[in-house]
Image 1: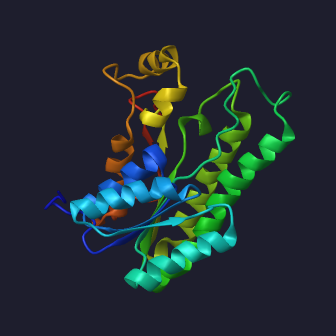
Image 2 (image 1 turned 180 degrees about the vertical axis):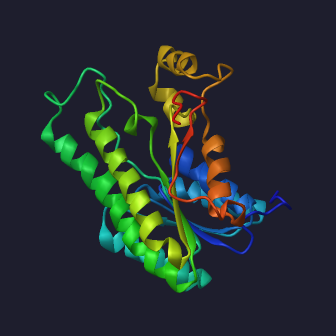
Length: 258
């Protein structure tokens, strides 16, 4: 059932990117009282979460969203405002993950994979930001949360295109926080390490999960989507009203920045 302790009561939140993490975000934000618009390039995945939210007594709309397509993003934002008359928060969460082979570096990675990684992960976050900002400013302010990755700040012999795209997202977040803070806009980034959910468990060998566990300071488990959703709920809420411009690691102490 929907929680009685609702951090996001009365807020409208767009979650761009469904799936293992995105669905958990949407469900947690609905539990906190938000009205949700959840979009993904795979509509059926977004519909699963929207149905679950409806069963819990919340309000959610699922739609097809290609985060790297300007018209698709604009349509999703219009749906938020046309249906719920406002937009208070956005969690930009989608990603292109083809650059995942640990044996491939800058000399071996096909330029087509590099280009698509930047188009979706960097350009897509840019387009979503451009679409949501004017509506939030018109409404008196809002909060944007970006999902990144620990690889954006960690040295690695692999995932060069993916790490570059996520580092670009950090620069975008800081720009938004600095330029639009006076207009009531907050922007923050959540940077998880390995986050396990049903889809990932089918793809990741057990030894990789064990490696992630051993790399973290917390050894009891690896990260879960609910860990990201809990922080996202804080950052989107009035409880997080003095937090902006931050990259927050949700990784069990895998990384530790000053």
